[in-house]
Image (cartoon, rainbow over all chains, first blue to last red; front, side, top):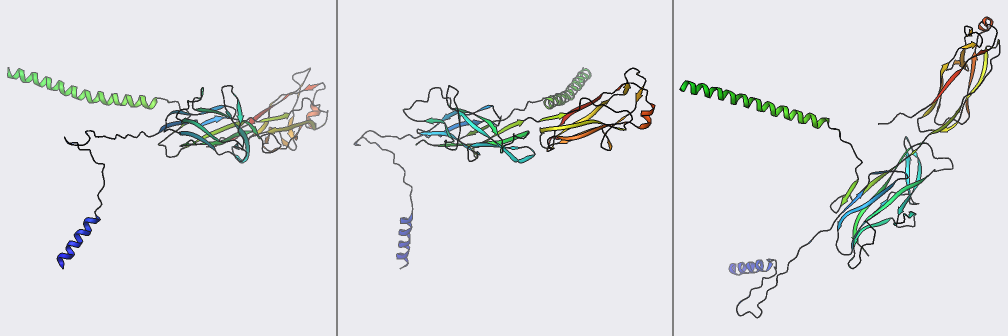
Length: 181
Length: 190
């Protein structure tokens, strides 16, 4: 009885063992059907990119958001999504020492070599693709992986002239890496 | 010979000691100089951009937008006024704050910076003393802080006592008052 139980336990333990299955090496002998063995080599290169966002800008001046270098997987891109605007896609600036008083300003983007400025509205996409790797599609000529913007046309919150003082506001750029659909 | 040898050795030894003593001192001095140089270097601080790459944990960068709206104001100073002989309080007109757009905490200051003698035009020795007043107070300056209503007036008067009038030599008298207008910016916050 004891021997029976011991044998059963050993059998159970043997069956419970999990053994990792490795790819088998090819062994070739003089009488092997094939004298060839294949070795599969794999190597992974992770994506890399760097996006530079300026720290500050004065109303009316231009600024650029740029992807300075990138190495992407096929069909993937690096984008910058603009956050922090109000519902009308305007930049909000608060008055120093009187922060309840706020003005708004337009955020415009330069879309081409002709220095065409487009004022962003709530209907526009606020996502800008800075770099992409699309097999078979060459990069857009003249595009240097950057977008130039400017904040301009400050507007008073009421019918009165804008109050004198120093103002500041924030535009946030959120950088993402995603498959381009 | 041995003595000389010993003497020679001692001198060398002493020299080596001296050298050993000098070297640490030189090193200390050199280190101190380098430290002083490093501390005295002024480094220009440039605005730092945000760099985001594939390994950056927080992939957001904030851009600060700044703007400055310059203050404006208009103040009117009376150009001329006439004093009447024997009148103690002669109306000179009003300093008028016509309006302005000032920064929070700022103010416009109007100061009487020069008060010329009320002097006889034909006799420089003949002068009539006077005081410039606004209401019951001697006027030296007035301030219009942000929020002051447009067309706020500050009355001015030339006060001459009856006694001084009676002492005055006859003739035409003239005085020039100079008012200086300045913008007092708000105190900077830390």
